[in-house]
Length: 367
Image 1 (cartoon, rainbow, N blue to C red):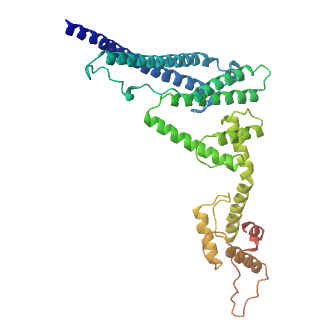
Image 2 (image 1 turned 180 degrees about the vertical axis):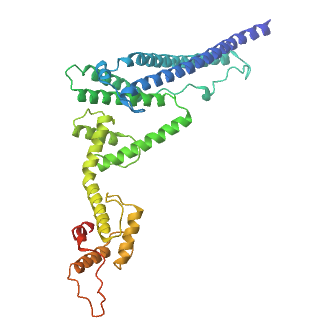
Image 3 (image 1 turned 60 degrees about the vertical axis):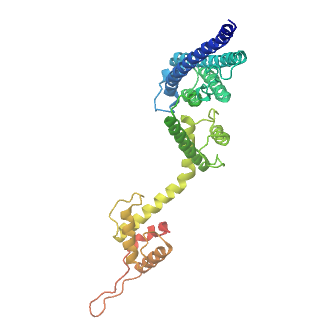
């Protein structure tokens, strides 16, 4: 009887452990389902926001879209928010179930007098632990972006200029979309392969942006493909300089402003290069070595024509307008301007330089 009593006493704690293990398994299953549902609803919401943000696909919101300020986002937002809450609650339930299982295992261990009396009293493997909680900074950024988006909606009225309304709404939408994309990734909604692809795409995009910001004079840091504080500061400086909403993210108006600055800085050099190439084409055309268009575009055919011209001038055929070519060209032009010698008694004529005097106006443009 004593043996039977001891056996019954140890069976009860072990049974509690079994119950708690089953509860933990159900909690993990529920948490996985809640996480999957969140990923689905978050993707739907990001797609809805992208209609106004244009981060993923190019769209064209109408005046009516701006006036209604994204009313079609209300349901996707509510679904995603509810799914996020459910996922957090399910995650908390897993933690609670783990704690209860640990307590049951401790009680079973204390009631057992035989070492290793129950195989069920094993601490759950670390690999079965739920996905880590999303970083608080990511959640805070989503909350902030939602608040800013609502403020942007409320700031658009009947008297708001259309361009200002469009810029204001797009800037807020881009910031909102980027924050949810970060949450989508941090919540583990991407597969390993998709995660790597996304990281590569973000790195390449950011590196290109940093180069452009550097050329425009806004970014002085290292081009490393990391959208960090220095990149955000550079984007904000660009936005301030153009009187745009200061968000630190690149929306349509910010991209247009950046391109405008780049064209202003590089436009003069580009126009000078275009004019120089056109001058070379015109000079070769007058000399009879080029029958193509005078359009300022340097092509392999133009290089070959210049080499033939250089050979005629008796200078190294480099295919580039170097100092030797310019000097020989100037000499040929000067000689072409001299009076033509009288025929010799034998009837032969003294040859002149191959370049006609008509090339004179274009000569200086090639130097």
